[in-house]
Image (tube, rainbow, N blue to C red; front, side):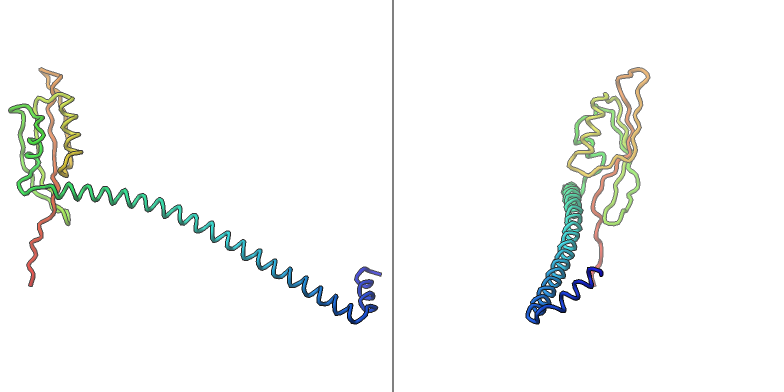
Length: 185
């Protein structure tokens, strides 16, 4: 005989109270197994949700940091743009830096270009007789100065008669907000 048959015979030979007690015991054991299985499945799904939320949170934190950096850069640029006065031009900005030797400065205005909310006032600037240190200081001050200036093109040439002096030709653009000349009805 098989084990199953022996268990079946033992069950039939039991008292009715014992059969009822065994039935309840089996039902309770199966219920506990079902509860344990569903709880384990629920805990596993919660752990998976937690991991996905942690990943999303990490991505959001990196995006938040990138946003804060971009907002800071935008604020610095808007502060620089706000510092522009109506009579500012690329030539005036270079003259304010006081690095240029006397007689070594020429500026030729270029046409104004509209870039949506901003306009670019450009000039072709020629500086003569600068040392390399003065040139580096000039470029640094233009880039990091309080006015929003873009160096679009630069050409450095050494002098034949004095190789320690440079002639610099640059195309500078001053960024300023576009004039809002809208007529309201």
